[in-house]
Amino acid sequence: MADLIDRPKNELTDSELQRLEEYEFSNGPMSILQDAVNLGTQVLISCRNNHKLLAKVRAFDRHTNMVLENVKELWMEYPKKGAKGVPRERFVSKMFLRGDSVIVVLKA
Image 1: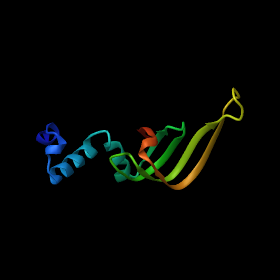
Image 2: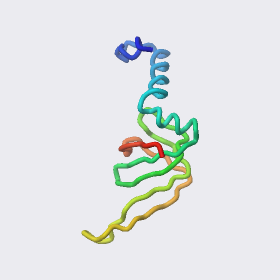
Image 3: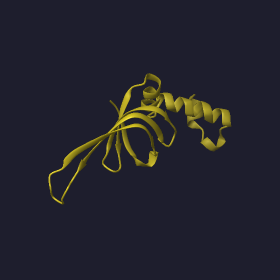
């Protein structure tokens, strides 16, 4: 596997790229999402709009686009400027989350 990691991706064949991606998904940062899919565990996702999502991951891709189930969405709502925030939450049974809104993914 070390030979694939060190070579530029434009020099790899399609099958080598596939093997490298599988290795990266099982051993790199994406392994958190891979484990969540395989084990059915929850993750905590922090989004760019200051919302937090506690959910089970059903599927994901290299861009961190995700299909989520049993999503608990949490955020703070500020009724007036400078006023104290009010915690809000909602439940969503199924959700597609676009990867560009993801800041961080944590094991729950």
